[in-house]
Image (cartoon, rainbow, N blue to C red; front, side, top):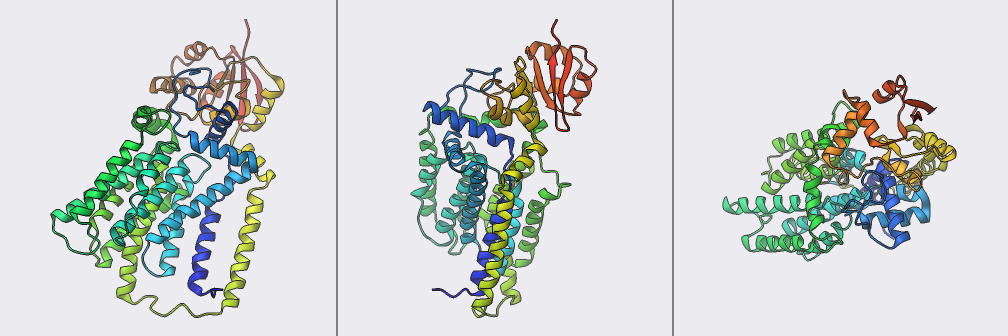
Length: 482
């Protein structure tokens, strides 16, 4: 049995910290439409080619590149409920950061501090959604490229297999090609500038990366939708409403403390680069710039930036530490019994935290705090005549709760609803000059929207609508007959 030395203790504590940071009671509204789709696939034994969930886009083409993630999510939910989904996210975060840990330089304290900062920066994106596939696979791809560049270990044959899996789990595979593109460009420039060093990938070895990249692009066609799956990321980013009105597609608001760790990471990296006296690797420079840019454009990329930035930051902090003789004393000695006792206490604390976070009571409270759980119960019990007009933010949840009897008007599947549809929806909910006519034209007979919203305030004075239910979260209106 290996002795529990201080370095091993710090490593274990770092990953327990990552687990705790990533663990939370799941109540993300998009999680629910993923679950509903997984259930649909499991029960019908078919992958959806058209929308089965909304009444506004029912039967219209739907490229569900998330289908494999959704099946896995539903199976986990079926076996272990929402607690299993929350544990799954935390474990996936641990796996992803294990790939990052292997890419990092420096002593154990440096790596532990940086990786905990990275986990904190990524935490807003760590939810039970298909994007967790992109989170893990970016980390895995980064590790394979690290091995090839910094360790001269060739495992590139795995890369096309990653992309076959990726294109059937999430549309974020485009991030993988960003990573490969920055790698190829950085190494090509390094060769053109005749830079020296063992880490510089030669033209011959770089040629293999280029071939693997082309193969990876070709194997993307191995999915139920073939070429349509390749077009989806470009279609999605061209929906203007996403950037204008949907929070996760907006630039990070650094007035929110939860989003600031990404900025801290970036600034620390720039300072470390300046003080390390280590030559900034061109691939590192391009990769950092690219992923910082996409994160400044959309906060949904915070997690990807954290994965990419942590190894780069560690390389320069470790260079500063080495030059300054930080941590030169051996850490292999210590008192294993004390270390084991401390580890036991931390494990017990994390276990207690896990039990509290994953309890049914915590799940109910989380849903009641941010989702229209009580309003959905009222609709299920009173069964008013539809169709239903609903808030965009709650569409996924309502699809899961009421979808069998009340198909949604809109939900988080933004690729299903085009830009014109979403702008019409916003003209109604933000009460444009002709919101009443637009609302009438939808044909909706029930409205479930946020209590106290702009639309709620206007409908309270609109004689064509009657308030049927209200609580602090949601309000239900019914159209007045006649």
